[in-house]
Length: 327
Image 1: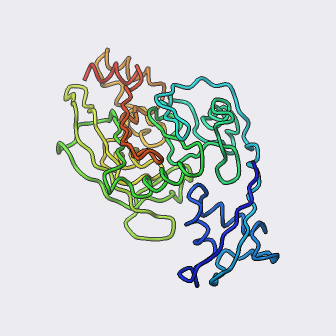
Image 2: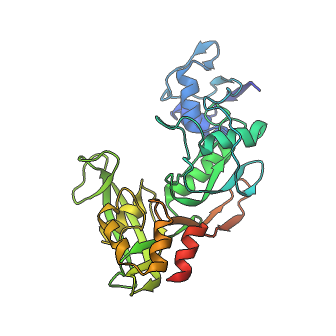
């Protein structure tokens, strides 16, 4: 439903940017959405259009903001079965299987989690950025299974995004992964802190860098050994994220010289080790079908609306559990 909102400024508002002022008044609308509405000519001062988001306001100004009805999403809904762990009017938590891409992209315009959520949520999607679509605040790689939370509206999207941006430093966000890796680390636990950026040699890969340059971001992963198999020379590792970079765990464990078993991008140099496994383990590792043994096992956060603390747990898929039991 379209809305027309009116605001009168006070003496304390003098000198503020108009987009900041409006964002403080409308908690259900993101500042990015407000900025785009201003650029599109949806804001008026009296009868004059204001299309500069940095416009400085004065006392006793009266602004009118037109918010159009949310558009139908560009991706189309598709009937894809989902394992739903939790759902209310604001958020939905999914246990994502291996092989499911999270968001449409070149080469994957359909059969994604977003297509499935548009179909499942229907009218409960009230509009994010002016479009009836789910709000993706974090992602899992296609072949990484496990827990992912998605927002249904702008207000919950803002609240979740703020927590993920803070990377759990205030204790609200918890993300824990299980990974089965090649080798047994020398130490029982540790912390990996590096700069990560796109590889210049292979644009599909992320790599570790020593020097700061645009596009390279700090990534921090804490890890510890849960189980180890010295005979087959493999380990079960728990990883907890302090940042959320693309391929972070996969790159960091490879940097540690213990890449995730089955990883087709970062573990290629270790495939010959499969032949050194005992017969039972060899069969189970081959059953991974060249997909990384990485699972988002635990996800905790503060509900963006109710402010209640939630924590969810997910068992790894069977092909990973079979290996874990044998370690």
